[in-house]
Image: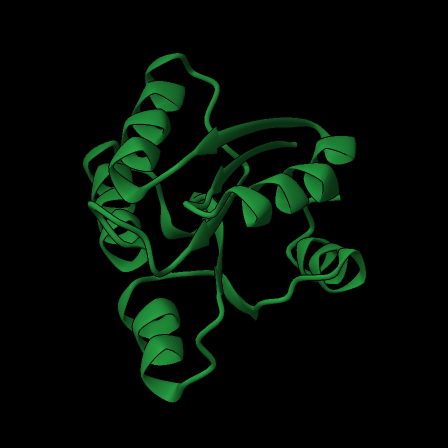
Length: 131
């Protein structure tokens, strides 16, 4: 499994990397702009990500904006909805507006509220058939 972790907070980034690295290759982006570049490059190299774990609140381009751009790129490349990258939005915000924005408007696969535990993350990844 190839994963992109998108997180601006160093401690959260480190924790996510420790949780996901045993499952396969893991890249890091520190904001939405960097995430979109990494996402595009992975497709250009014919090695797309299987999973993106992305924070919502980030500088430059937030998680909602980055997800929107990623989904646009997938449409431009002719990737069917069933083959889109799985995206787990991660955030400290547990409010209905962010859930709706991430899942229904943005096309996220799922949504996890921090703090994220190994058990919670692995359960979510398994539910999408990635491990």
